[in-house]
Amino acid sequence: MGRYQAVLFDFGGTLFSYRRIGAEALDLVRRGAVYLGVEGELPTLGRAYRDASRAAYELFAPRPFYLHRELFHETFRRFAASVGARATAEQLDWFHEEQRLLLLRGFELRSDCVEVLERLRGLGLHVGVVSNIDDDYLDPMLQRAGLDEVLDAWTSSEEAASCKPDSRIFERALGKAGVRPDEALFVGDSLEHDVIGARRLGITAVLIREPGAAPPGAGIGEVAEPHHVIETLSQVVPLLSHASA
Image (cartoon, rainbow, N blue to C red; front, side):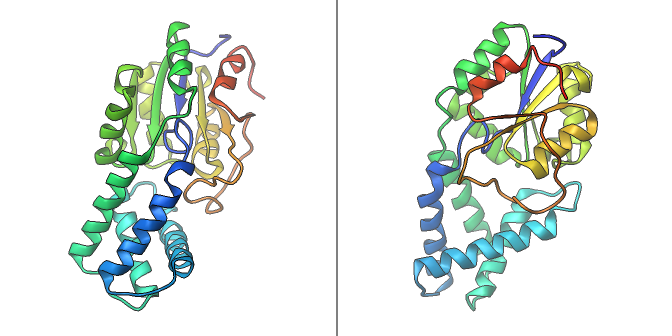
């Protein structure tokens, strides 16, 4: 294990892949357009939604903290405007809840996730999740996947009042683990949220890379080079004996 006493993981895009929910997400965009009273071809609606999502992330990303409910409201508000509609408060809440349920029902852990987490805990390491999401997403997702029985702790951006790459969310997770930054390894899929945030505090940063599955907010904000790059969660274990670059 070397000097590491804790391994912390991002959640979305790291312990589970966004690939499995792509088709369902596009269907939600279609249903959203219907609810707004808008007709349009699905590829066109999809592009409009992606543009709205990027614009919303560009607005929120510089903030040290925001509720993702507000981010998702802004995304749907901008999407509606781009297709010639005006979203009501009821429609904004509908979209947020439908998106939450879509993710809750549709996500699936990576095939090696539970095995890796259990192995790390068996080595005596503190194992935690640090996620940029609100509690009404994170808590039921962890429970549905059984991760609340496998993890030592988890920290949401809502709980910490801090969104990665802001330091406070990392500091809160380190406090739960009772370790110094140099005793922790952080695994995530985002250069803009996970890698740069971890490196700023002196945490060893590991990027899990999945070609063709860019994380939300990719390309928005500063980035840093990871200490290590992996393609499967199982590759985390051999890293524990490595000193960081």
